[in-house]
Structures are given as structure tokens and as C-alpha cells.
Image (cartoon, rainbow, N blue to C red):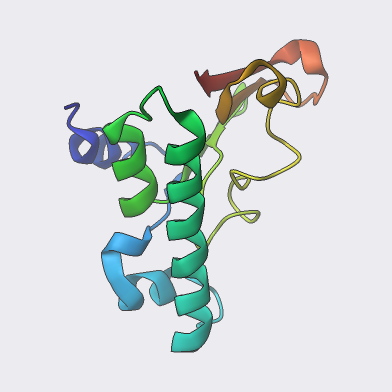
Length: 142
């Protein structure tokens, strides 16, 4: 298994980056990440949605297997982004900062062709300030 925690600690040191929190970090961490904390019932709905999404993802991938590193990343960190003058990189994630810092796993920003070919769109690298498609690279899992 890749040392996801070590990689994340290195990404946290990059200026202009953000690492979200996932459901495995608990209620306090999930609420601390939000600009406006929410009640336990709202957090429970978010946690249920993430669990349902991951279970559905694992089921849809069969007979293949979704990498355990990816599941761990989504459960523990939810998502991340890095913004530089030359590029933007972000995962499609499930954390509380989804659609604020980075796009959701079910976002329209995901590769529109991925599902058609049996892929799971997991991230995007955009070069420069342009949103032109030829300056974007999608990351996917099969």
C-alpha cells in the first residue's frame, strides 16, 4: 500500500493547496473544516451519502476492484486541490469542502466520456488560466 498519509503531509506543505477531511476523521474534524458548522443530523446525512457512494462505486467496478488506496483517501481525506499560476490540480472528492475547493465525484466537471468507456473520473489537471478542453488532463480509474 502506498503511504497516503505521507503523501498528504507533503501536499499540505505546498503553498496554495488544501486537503479536506473525510468521514473517518469524525464529526469534530468534519465540522471544523466548514466555514459554518452544521448539526449532527446534517453530518450524518453527509456520512451516509459518502458510505453509499463508496459502496455503489465498489459494486459498479466489479468484477474489477477499486484500489484500496483510493477508498482510503476518500474516506480519510475526502479531496484535495493545488492552485498555482501555471496550473490547477484537484481531485473529485467527497469531503465537506466539495464544490468550494474542488469538484464532487458526481460533478459535471468530471470527464464527460469516462463513464461511457467504463472509467471512474478521479481528478483534473488544468494548465494556465484557460478552461479550454485541450488544456485539461483528466485522471481516471478503470
